[in-house]
Image (tube, rainbow, N blue to C red):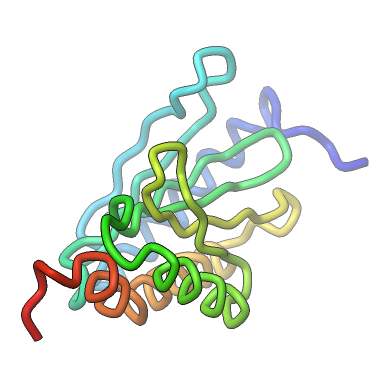
Length: 158
């Protein structure tokens, strides 16, 4: 079994993630800002980073990176619960999930659509964080317009 990210090991990993994100932001003009906080978990209060990226199809994409005891979880809010064409939206999401590597579309408690994934803590490197940010960014950008057109068809003019 792998070691838990606790104590000094967790502190070291936090510092490394901070550095990796700062370096990526310096190199990538699509990264608009990076903030740090903790998850809403009142017991663990896990370290969390908010990476805001500038999009074209979706104006901004905020990716939450949450460092747990064994994993780095990541997610972004894609759009609210679809009021129209729900079955078609869900079918599109399932079909797109088949094409994704390391992430998947999912439905939140409020029926909003998210893109989520998880990375084993032992695999956490600067290159992997870069890959995660790129995967999430490309998946949202590639699917956002089609999802909006289906989910809000009566409100969107072609």
